[in-house]
Image (cartoon, rainbow, N blue to C red; front, side):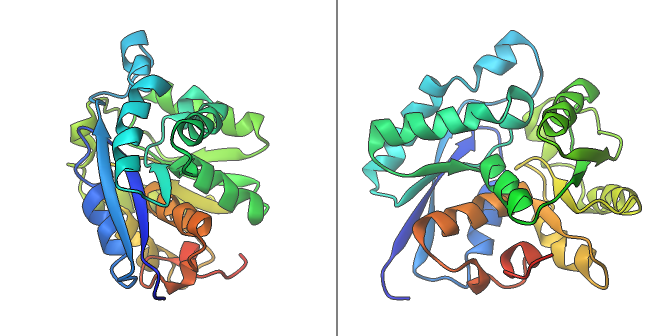
Length: 243
């Protein structure tokens, strides 16, 4: 690869996990770089104030800053479409592209595209959220024809605290979900330190771990025409192998 590619990443302001993880995933692709722009997100809840954090116009301010860096794609590395409805990210991507002329996508559009390509009918969910938020996510997948098998949500709502959850706790939750044998398991929050668990989780099993930081990167690479199989050590999402 000789042509430099730039991935623009929209980041929740209180997220401390996705930036270092994204850069680590891309470490074997020296000509692909990640660039970040933040907008205010401090809590995940179904209250009107919490939902307004994800208004497209607010996110567009951060997207325009990324456009100044002439990135090749703009990705929303967040999972809000899980409870807002998947069409919210379709609308957001169109709004960003219309305003900047740059292709746009998201963690959830990437996750759902992977599930579509692999004809997945069940999804294991591991989230840090409160029960009502997780129930909305499960309902949206049910409406899309995918049944969700979930571990008990951790019941957190302060976004900063999600990154404080120990990977060992997440690994235990993933193991609980894996016993139900879903087609794939998603660690469904970009402020979880979980992406690096994929190879260990997948070793010796048919389980695929779809971390939402990883689905952001996977979808970004697809969008800019870079082969995702160049990524090493982050699980079968990047392998190109049909599951």
